[in-house]
Length: 207
Image (cartoon, rainbow, N blue to C red):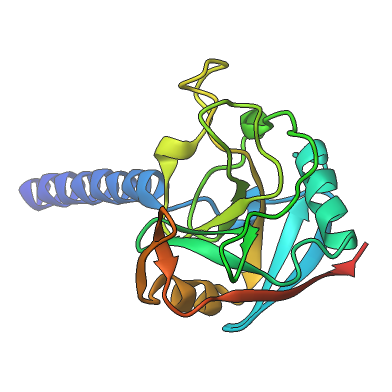
């Protein structure tokens, strides 16, 4: 009886260790949950030729970036532009060119807010920029994969990362459909959809 009790205790202890290890593994491999995306938001709808994408923008975590994006929205500047750069398992980028690949006017560059703690995970929206950290204007991209290498790591040219300011709450299937369109080189640009994916209208759903 004593031997059976010892075996039972050992098995119970082993099961406890395995369950703890499984929980730890889930904590490591599970991407950020909706609970981490909290705060003051404004909701916008991007109506595209492929369907609608609805996003929540986090103006408490990225106030300058959200204000900048909304300035373009309110001016109607995104209407008629396209997703001009599409790379599978990476991202879809838009907001800077029309269907003829003519670059659109933009406002002054803004401060990079990539150090706000929001990660570049699938479904998040971030500002596109040049190699200069504080160079973002109108162009944005939606991540179609978890792109941790785009996150802020340090206040250096190499470490600033790309500022996430919101996430897709409806229409991720539309984003993933856009990701799969056929692309080619056009006018010196790579990864341009052969059939333009047009941003027909961007509107604020709630202030």
